[in-house]
Image (tube, rainbow, N blue to C red; front, top):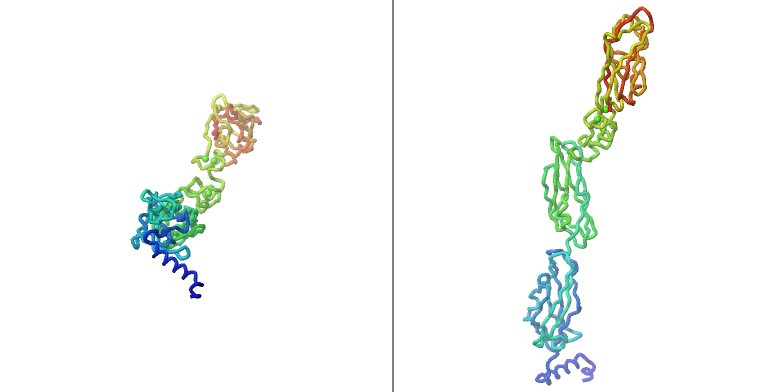
Amino acid sequence: MPLLTRSPVLLVGLTVASGCQGEQDFTELSRRLSTSLATFDAGIVPIEGRETLALFLASTGSGEVEIYDVYVDDPENWEITDSWKIGNGIIDSGSASSPAYGRVDVLFKPTEEAFYRTTLTIVSSDNEVKETDSEGRGIWRVVLRGIGRDPCGQLYPSSHDFGPRPAGGYFSESLTVQNCGQLTLTIADFDIDGSGSFSVQTPTPIYVLPGDSDQIEVAYEPDGAASAATATITMDTDAPGLEDTPIRLRGNQCDGSGHPGWDADNDGWTACGGDCDDRDPTRSPDEQEIPGDGSDSDCDGDDGGFEVEASGAGGPGYDIEDNATIRSQAMVSTCATVWDISVGVDITHTYVGDLYITLYSPAGRSVLLHDRDGGTQEDLSGVYEVGNVGSLTSAEDLAALIGAGGTGTWTLEVSDAVSFDDGQLNSWFLVLTCT
Ligand SMILES: [Ca+2]
Ligand SMILES: [Ca+2]
Ligand SMILES: [Ca+2]
Ligand SMILES: [Ca+2]
């Protein structure tokens, strides 16, 4: 007996047992239901994914509790499973220190990126809870929360140009996938559209944890012809951002390429991107054109400038007499700047060593073409050119006339400085390259 009195559990048990039996006809049993939390979090769940929330229902009264119904305000995103119906929804009696448990499993199924919140209501035979429905049944409410998110992935770079590559080689490049979200992202597969010379070497599936990154290795194996190749790789992934970011690859394709391999002379222009001479860094669209130099410096397809021809009078009336000077004029209507010049003369004379020939430009410059050279040679016919590359050699270089204006009157002056021999200026002409 003293043992019994020192055992509170047993005492309570005895008391309850005797009380119940004695009062059951006129006193209702205590039916009490509760949950451990007022709010349950499902956490972050992928769109179209699902997460199970387990809510334990504690029965702590002296009577069993019957669950009549469990429902949520938002059944589209929160699905109540039938778990609570096990045992016909009846949870045994319990006590505060030793509850009996029932369970409600709820599936959280977010359909879009959003914060979700719903109220879960449990209708039961709980007779101690404050809220009851119109039929006097106990109402217990808890809040369910969850977040719907898409996995987030970023790819960089999203394109790669392998540049000019020899056939038969193997070239690879690593691209980085960064998980930019709070969910694990999955790349299930790759789909390659384009040249079969490209492949993805990284095996699938690829899982990238939040905050982590992973490498995707893409390879290029140029075929025998090493001809231009392109491909677009799309990813089968649960990260919409990645799904919308195709990987674009190219190899041996100069057109539109910025790959340095196509710029052999390092002038910043590729052979297909506007460099008309990829062996010469002084020729590119960046260069200034020098008209008339025989070179298309700015790669626009021509040497620059335009040619102007003009001729002066000659023949009868243009006799070259002893110790006398004659002048003949040629008119040039448009030549802002002279970039190149050649002068043709046709003179009959029995001793050209008597002659001085000078050309005057409208800009006030002059060049001595003939300085009593040639001695006993008869006649003078040919062309003077800049740099003395013409059939006639000038005493002073015609280059002195370059860079100055050419519009206006050009004058050829012929002087015979010695007696005895004479002749005639038959004709002369100018060919100018102008801008
Ligand atoms: Ca170049
Ligand atoms: Ca070049
Ligand atoms: Ca040009
Ligand atoms: Ca040029």
